[in-house]
Image (cartoon, rainbow, N blue to C red; front, side, top):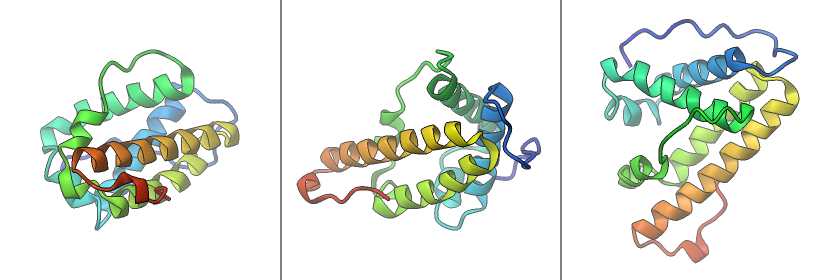
Length: 146
């Protein structure tokens, strides 16, 4: 991504979970994702520089709804992932989780980080199954995304 993101101030995890912590999680995660050799090109090929602020705001709404029960997210997250085709395989979801886990642990309070990670793992597995089914893969033999 070429557009500059606001700095995602990492540091010690806060003792309470709030919107600022959710924002730091999302911005730092996507900052790292965009530098990643596996995931960066997938995202930069689909989200143009001027669309990143909208995407980040939507992801903040999503994680705010998940972690804070804010109800801000309105959308259907699966359809855009279905459109990824072979760019949404086991390796990509595993890499996504490998970036997400340490970011959550770094910026969220411990209990919130574990909740976010558990949700991300369930979501990655269910998305991977849905994508596999959509693509005609044998999902009965599909391993759990790790």
